[in-house]
Image: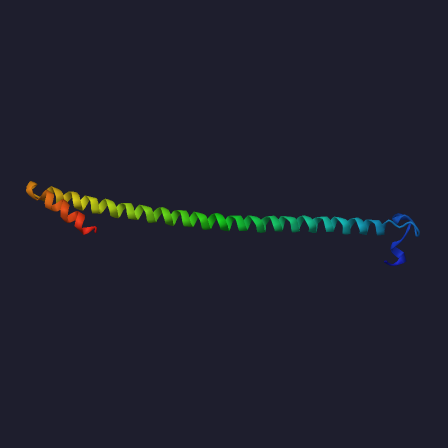
Length: 106
């Protein structure tokens, strides 16, 4: 409670003071604002978790894609080298070349 000087006819009189009601309204509004802020905070925490997961899976996807691309390029390089070797061989050595190629992979 506050000093009696603040209680006058402008506040509803000595026995019907509306200052207490005003304080209660302010406290209720403050509780509403705190609850809303807590809900926004929880929503942001959940969004941060989702963003971390998206970032992680995107990172995995990119790395796996790069892994595939690198290996495809290596295979292409090997095939180009084999093609060049095959083209350089005389026709009579083609059978020997293919046999040696098969034996290398055993």
